[in-house]
Image 1: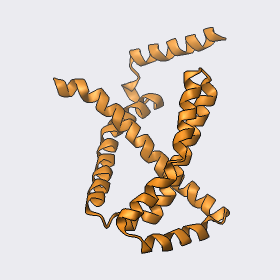
Image 2 (image 1 turned 180 degrees about the vertical axis):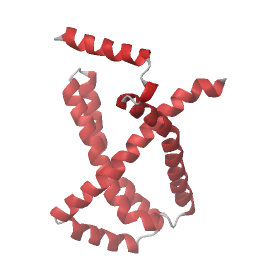
Image 3 (image 1 turned 180 degrees about the horizontal axis):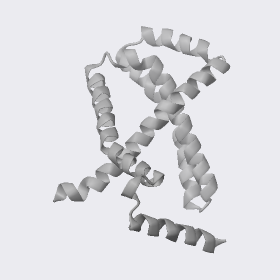
Image 4 (image 1 turned 90 degrees about the vertical axis):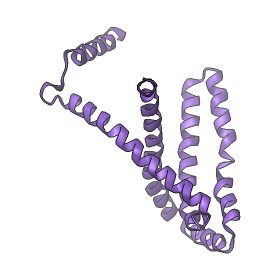
Amino acid sequence: MLRRLLQPIWVLLAVIFLIEAWLWDHLEPIVAWVVAKIPLQSFKHWLAERVDTLSPAMTLIVFIVPVIPLFPLKLIGFWLLAHEYWLSAAMTIIFAKLVGVGVTAFVFDVTRPKLLEMGWFERLYEFVMSLRAKAKAMVEPIKQRIAEMLRGNGDRWSSRMLRLIQRFRKSVHEAR
């Protein structure tokens, strides 16, 4: 019974986790493109050479430090949110999130081999990757059902779904 009560929470956490993973996957090529356009490729090479000389523990510091300056930006976003500057707050928080994920992907690409030398980090990395696979497996059937309903395949369009769509359309038209 408890498991059934907690299932929506687990699905929500899985969705959030997959959004983070999706951002990571899709920002990594963008970061690579930026690195190619700006002379960051030479910086990446320089950083990789320096990381090779560091111990794995010092490499962990190199991995964590670049994200710290983004923390005040997130605080500014939350201050804006508290003062009801909704659009500015959302833009600031989203910008900080995207830059944070991009910088983390860039630095992780350089530091990953050294970080994986630490047993605990390797276990944590494998655990996160297995969580990602489980989250994807948990959310996939829901995504399939939503896709089928949106495509209108067969009898998947329940009368309840049609009523929800009609109610939504009506509320949009009334708002005008």
